Image (tube, rainbow, N blue to C red; front, side, top):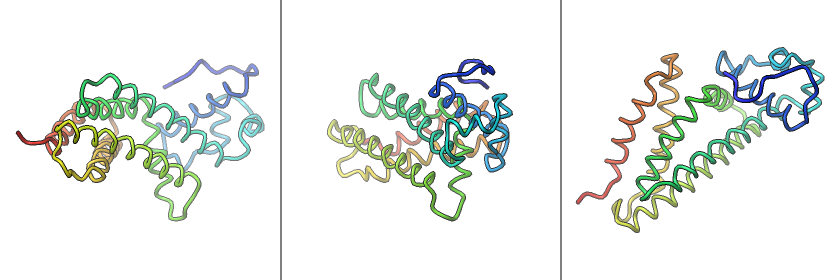
Amino acid sequence: MRMGNPVSRTRQPSETRQTEIIEAVLDLAAQGSPADITTADIADRLKLSQGAIFKHFPSKGAIWLAVLDWVQAGLFARLEAAAEKAATPLDALGAMFMAHVKFVMAHPGVPRLIFQHLRRAEDTPMKAGVRNMLARYRKLLTEILGEAEKQGQIPAGQDKAAAAMLFIGAIQGLAIQSMLNGSQTKMQDEAKRVLKLYLQSIEAKS
């Protein structure tokens, strides 16, 4: 899977080369254990020297953080675009759910890389970055759920924090299931079924 322009041996502007390195990491994460990825693997994928990799990132840890920044920017762009097009808050939640699932399907290395880092016992800048991303995600969802409450789409006093966690957890579960199955072919159909149950669980009953 390639998400950018074909890689060549020619010199590239720093920002372009950084993006190519990030894409290479995600490609490698989609194909094997993220824990086993080395800077030599990244360099081999891009037909570069390890020195060229470290010219753009001071350390392996800096590469992981750049990958997380790329993921956050790309994911939230999709989520916010999906929400803006929706007619109602619950429609926005449904569109966001499917937009997130499609993002995972397009970039299967993302959940593998994140879950691998979260398994580590010690706290790390990567884990802190994931916490910040999830906090931003929960805030966005809570705001939309608040609007749904104002419009009578969910019951007054609904536990919006729990509903936001359940939303994110459902997508994480789908991602884990696809990794266990070794295939994403059924992920979108399964996501639609899970989304239907989620919306039914939070909707105000007439």
